[in-house]
Image (cartoon, rainbow, N blue to C red; front, side, top):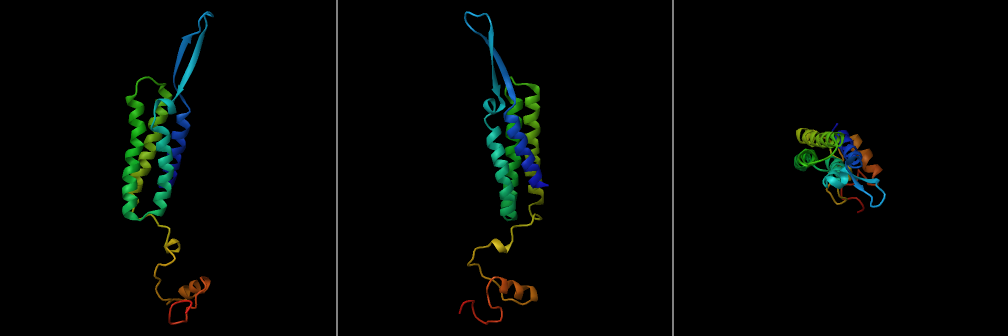
Length: 164
């Protein structure tokens, strides 16, 4: 659920960055016609795209870190999700649907960070399989441990260290 919220929030922020924030019309000299220019949300609200990237990075952090760092990451993501939402409300101008899209996307990222904070101790980690190669391993005692040692190229019946 955390991963889904963070990825959806990032996708919404990225999509919202392409929306039109404001349009201006300036007269073209000598023609009497006007020329319209559009400013996108990404141009008007600087934190939108960086928070989207941060949200995707938060997915990797949620999977790789331990419980303590997941809590820190959750707090940072919850706060970071509020930044574009507050910026969209506080910045003058802007189309109402662009404001609504940025606020909704920021709140989704904030909800993902808050949920990560709440479940930080229960999210499964990457496991010891991804530990450093020099990490100490206990002796093989169960049948599963024996088969795992064989799969790793070790002799589980040897009394010393592998390779000796």
